[in-house]
Length: 348
Image 1 (cartoon, rainbow, N blue to C red):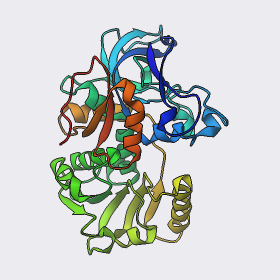
Image 2: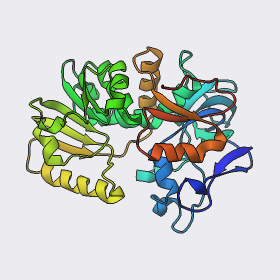
Image 3: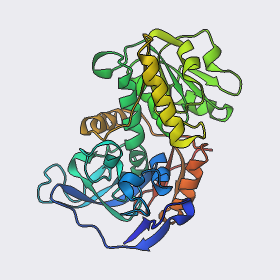
């Protein structure tokens, strides 16, 4: 079968298409005929060597990319009970959902014609959702849902109607899910994005949209229960200024240009500040959870969340897809579509 592989760390040019053996599902795994996958910053980070401690110090051990997946069940392991051949499913292609830290996100290779995933990392695809839309959801939706819950808003993480949530980076992959999930829980949502993306963010339900080219949200008189930051382009002290005294700041991304150092420095600053202020300042790494994937399935089936897809690429164009996502201007998600995934209209 055809699959995306890389044998050394580096820029998107290290990615190649190769013929590899079709995987065989383990006892608790499902073999999927891949119809669509989506690209995450995780893929770019691993490709560049950002996870060497778990992927290999000098060169990648497995050399596969792609976590988000949607497709049709081809075969199941002998212990699998929830799925059968022919079922349409979506979820994440990982090895061990119980693994710790970054190890849990080591890809089994969704950028391929076939891929394996644990039974617990998949759910049935809603009929009204395309394979591309389903593939766009998992990692971004896990991050958005779990990050909003870290805000401590309401019972079991559900935001209460009327609570004010600001999402910085509302037009990105995680941000577009965060806007819709927060709205589905009844929040009053403010999205921050560029001029180019104002209409997109408004179209997915944001009550207010701030064009960062025209206004700096950290200098406004508004106060928020939760700031969900996908960008990290303002200091913690500036963000705290527009946060309620008992509010929560959740950092899920950093585009300061300082890479891992930027993320770690903000994490340390958040930990220190949290000891001295009433506000809660946190960052986290999302984890794959069956119950959260089920929640996303229900929200998409009910039409409350609709994945925003910017561009679609073929399997042979994965390097271009990763390069485009890495530029930081994608509106919503970038997907990889295979032959069994019907075309989806792209954003203008």
